[in-house]
Length: 210
Image 1 (cartoon, one colour):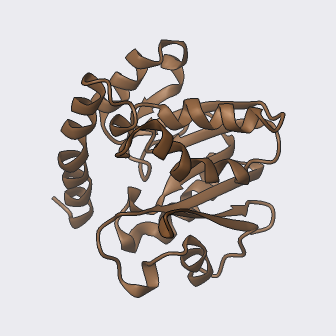
Image 2 (cartoon, rainbow, N blue to C red):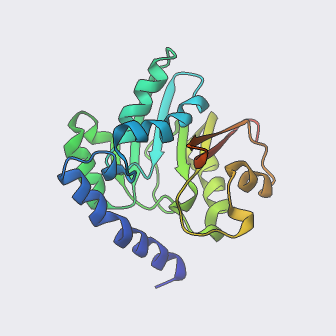
């Protein structure tokens, strides 16, 4: 087993049972990896909606139980946008649970490793968090998403969720620092804080402008 294979195995071991257990107990936010309930969820995740500025298709990588697919489409609709959500999760069990929870979207929720999975279509938006892959694979992740997942005018929304395991200084928030270190020109950035504490750092780059 390679070091990267071990990373993905450990990720599933760390997240799978806790996410499925939270969903089974009716904790929808917990089933998507966020403690504190739906109000706190919105305070942490709504910031991502600011990166959407046109109608289009959207793939959420690491979609878990699909809660972001539901909530972000509502948030963007408040600005008059129509976003069609799709999801990909590393865990086949979590993806299957998401399909059961969201049967109307069952045919657009997939399971697979983002570094080997081949998308059946291209998207106008892709959201991804840094720790979907090991730190030394993040430039490869960005390159792969830009080349294989996005439409010609697509936008990649790259985020760091906190808390997270300790990171080397070069990988620490803000998310724009990671993209800048890769020599990429990002189109915008934003963050979410609760009581002054950073919870989400996000930055986005446009395929046409990269």
